[in-house]
Structure formats: C-alpha cells, structure tokens
Length: 140
Image (cartoon, rainbow, N blue to C red; front, side, top):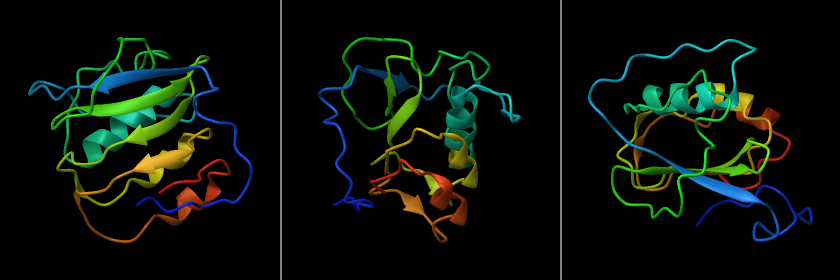
C-alpha cells in the first residue's frame, strides 16, 4: 500500500487530463546524462537507467515520455509514466519491474511528481532526502 504523504485535498486524477506512456526495455540503449535545462523526460530515462533498465525513449525530447501511445497495461518489462496534458510527469508506476539499486535522487527534478510507485522491486538504501523537495509528492 502506498504511503500517503499529504492530507491536502487533491483533484481527482480522473478529473485531470492525463496521458500514459510505456517505457520498453531494448538491449541497445545508451547511457543518458541530463542538465538543469533538460526536459523532464531526460530525468525519467536517467532514473530508469540508474535502476538497471534501458529504454529507446529519446531523453532529449520534451514530449517523448509523454506522447500519447494509447491505452497501456502494466505488465512485467513495461513501466508506465503518467503526465498532464501539458507534458509534466505526475506519476511513475514502476512496481514489479525488477529494478535494482537505490532510488535516484535525480527524481527531484520532476517538480510535478505526485506519485512514485516502486513496490516489489529489489531496491536498497534509504529514500533520498532530495525527494523531500517535491512539494506535490503524495504517494511513495
């Protein structure tokens, strides 16, 4: 069960205009580096890689992580990224993905992140203090 980090009244996710995208896991992806001016997608791909996964999503595209790919179902080997209609990442549903290592502190760059679901992975270490800077984060 996710930890509710806030008792604030939050608009229903159903009322928000959201897009869901899948990050597939190909064998030929390259390591990503991001800067303070990188799009949010770069930070998503970088974090995905730091936890032992790869993806063919273009991290330098402002919309690559949030382009509409239609309805998705979370299954083994697929990760779901939920975004607003304006392209901001709001939820990372990365449960049951065989992720390894620690939670990347770079996720703090996703300023609109409301939910981070990481259940049933092989993660170690503590929650990075940088995630405390995410004012909108309510579920971890």
